[in-house]
Image (cartoon, rainbow over all chains, first blue to last red; front, side):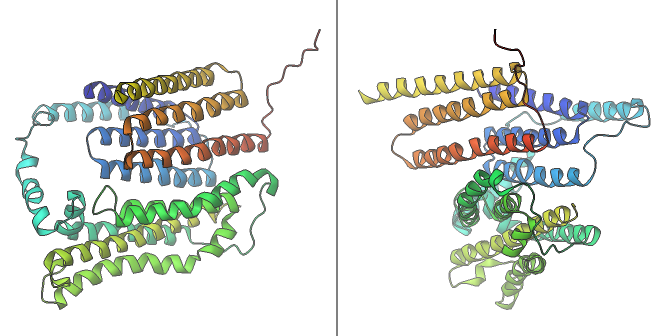
Length: 320
Length: 106
């Protein structure tokens, strides 16, 4: 039964992929990539990787679609006719694809418990998490505690990306709100946006602080938080959104998140442990782990939300 | 005693929802212009997805899952129609004329 779902989802993924290649309208392609991400998220749910599925749904299907649409709005929404023949790229893709398929022949069987990936560190994480970290969601314990260095690197990458977009696109303050379409035409959208705005922020906080127990964590929460403000900006205009959350504040917050993360690590050193060792943060190592994970997830969430909004503001403030 | 009854109810809702979603999909493919297609999507999506959720609530029983499903239901009955309304407004804004029957009634 599960194979049937797999086959249907993979088939739909392939159809979407071909449609993306064939489409000329970039708006339609942006929407199709969103569908592609949603299908991938469903596939991750089937594979029991709910944390990854939540990330894919929030980032792939949600915010990256909005950012792509904002980019398309700055450029043209028709794809240019290619100036060269597609034969060479086709040959490259075919050879690469064939090599990859050849590579899968050596891989362990799907779901094989004896596969190398299950033998190395994963079994130790699964075995030690209840005693050492004490959180039910092993994904969070791996991401935030065992592989804390990697996650710090990821947050720094996101911060750098935001700084890069800021450096490239700059930012224009818009004091007055552009009055787009008339108030009455947007009244339904505005009422619903107002109704859902606090709920989205509440859900983001739930995802952030419930990450220890269920799927979720700083990355997903940050994106959902940013989505709430983007919804507000879409319904009420960028000028009003900027009055709610100022751009200089965003720039500070993007740095503050990374600094919170690094400060938790340094606090570990000051208290006599190693960098990013949470056990020393409290009297009881397990409580320390809880505290450390919560703080760094908070840092991740703040940085991600701020950077997403910086990118969105950067694109949209350039539209005339 | 109760479980078979709930199962039957749940399956009726699930199948009904699936049928409505299928009708909506056929409508999107067959209807002639943008606005009629939106009509097919909005009506059938809300009803179809709602029925599927009700069917799942019957399966969930009195539990946290049911509360979450009810929340999803609540979000869906608001977001679906709003999205379609915004789409139709955007289409009107960009001067997309609805397809109308110009023939005089005989």
